[in-house]
Amino acid sequence: MAKKAKKIVRRDWTPTELRSLKKHSKDRTPVAKISKEMKRTVGALRQKALNLGIGLGHQR
Image (cartoon, rainbow, N blue to C red; front, top):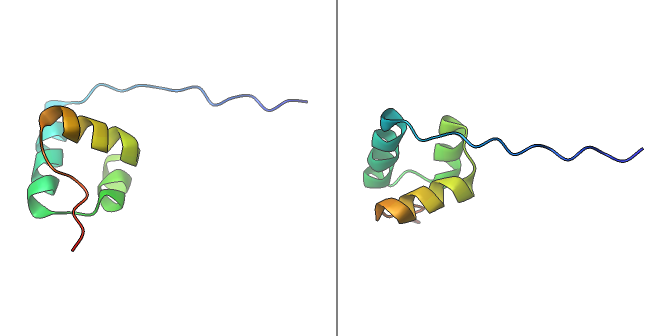
């Protein structure tokens, strides 16, 4: 029996999440840590940051 593909569920960004993302960018938090906290993929975080014009994924 073939495996069923996982359905993609898109969630809108809340104003609180956007504020949090901007704060993490300013604090230079690693993307993996942000991903776990916000329960969003690394790719989703990077795309949103790119659209907002903020940096993300800073290496020290």
